[in-house]
Image 1 (cartoon, rainbow, N blue to C red):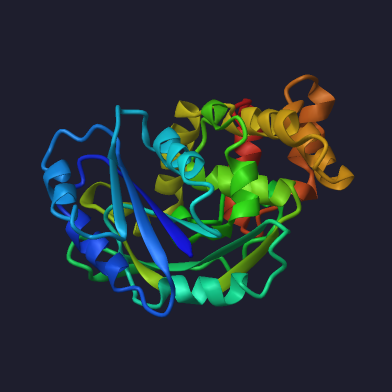
Image 2: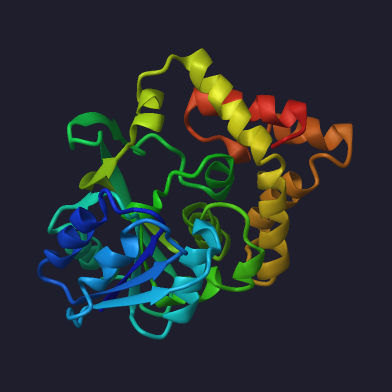
Length: 299
């Protein structure tokens, strides 16, 4: 069984479409767990309309922010399923989304952490395609994942073994739940399977649709503002991974984390990280942005 985890917050505009697409999932057993994160619009009314559906469990909580809300959902329901899928409140799932992930994950050893993720088709408010996010050329490594995640939470499905690691000291996590999921997976040696197909319409709102059409300089400016707001998040992330999973992390991966966690300690450390191939993303533009973040001390 797959537990679908959906955190909602003021999502009245598109929520019903998303829930309906989940209810149409075929050929696999699923249950939808929803946690409302203190909505103030009509989101709660929409959720109440599903109270008679035995496959949908709704909880109402205080506002924690999306990161902690998603991780709390996982923590609270970790014993309710074999597999878990994160879900955004405004996308549309194709009816074969879950079964495609299950077909792959079910063939892997159940006692080993495993993670599935895929590409996604980007659409606007009216479901007109505006882009396609492919991760085929991204390097699949921890350093690449920390530098810029290539695992979209809305496409991810993972087993209980990985979920148990993800929720360890989850209250301390400050980065996106999907980034944390991917980074933990690579840190503990999980099997990470990438599907270069899309089974989701990833809805982009008017406020961020322009990012798909922006030139590189504009994207660079947006990137720097975003990273300045969350400065040192990669460094803090590496430190938390080392603290939480020190005994589970292989030596070669631990070396990468130590380089990131200590790069600001000395000039030599910074130069070492600047030219390290271990954080290569496979995308020259992302690599250039990361070098800039290292040089300015906000990586």
